[in-house]
Image 1: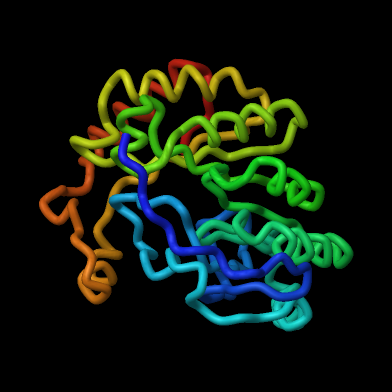
Image 2 (image 1 turned 90 degrees about the horizontal axis):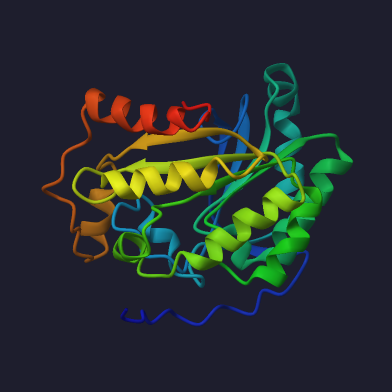
Length: 256
């Protein structure tokens, strides 16, 4: 497997400051209810279908403080409370800034706000685990199961993600698994079957979300001068999605 050069991470080992890409104040797809979604800056994966390639560079985005974010979050508490929502931190990859993300979640829990972490589970294991102290729900993105396909999709190894998933099970952390279905890439029958079988061993998993591939981020790749390798790939048909969902259901998993 070839290695991928990544830019050096900025010195952000701080509980009070971090770098974010953007925020979404009324998100409805990253956890239950209406959510305040924070997109952090920086990611080590190079997913072929990434719709936020502008979050890759850990030195990009904007620097902000926990206080600034909490002040903004509190403006939307009524929406979150009414809908059973909360705060989701996604990216990029939140676990590249573990101290910063942990502090945001800690402050949210002080305010009685539900917290969700959307992650690939790839960054440093020991640095990532303390973040889970203040996380109510993990949205774990498992891009594939067969190591060769996972590497083709992401340019990194699957093993850190599987280790993270097993830890979530050990501590019984409520988890939703997310799998992006890409025709002729991640839809390999053995790949899907292997992932379903693995997930069925995790008692912490509440459900699996099958996310059909789309090309909404293609224009960003072009703007940034990146080659978008999936430009000729179509979204999966409803029949293809249903077939994959049935594979997961076969293992007793709740699928959405």
